[in-house]
Image 1 (tube, helix red, strand yellow):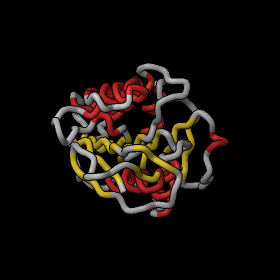
Image 2 (image 1 turned 120 degrees about the vertical axis):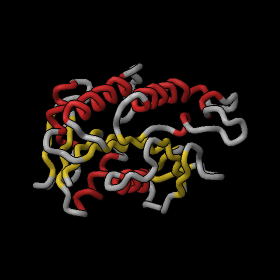
Image 3 (image 1 turned 180 degrees about the vertical axis):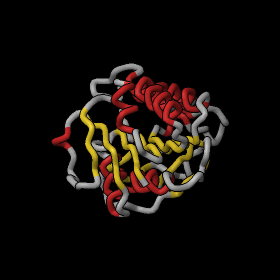
Length: 207
């Protein structure tokens, strides 16, 4: 399997990359800073560029079978950068006839168990996270209107700890779920690439 990976140098993306290479898959990675790749390997084809460049996104995907995105929200935060990159990924995939996309988003776009509304609409939702949650919601809207076989993996706060098995539930966070490791989320994303589990769903994951 050939995997196009966006966000390979990030804290989640590097674990997607590691899992793919462990299973002897080839990865096409679009990165802005190749020096940040921590797993140099002949199975990694590195493309230098930006996901905001739709032509580079499309070029990265050539000859690939599936697509994974662990693109993060920039620091300092740039409104609509993530949703624009997602729009580019969707356009490139549809142009090339690719179907399976698994991407990482945030738990703000999941449903609140008590109200059934989105967590980002809850009065208890941390207002500091609202700009990020709204950008993830724009990402969801784009995917909903696409023809792709997409899944959004939505963890709560993530941390740098060893991989711990995750619980997963469609549209909501697993009961009591408050954290997840970058490693476990990356491995979960990788596993979904070879299946249609959680098709057209936002899936909440947590330890």
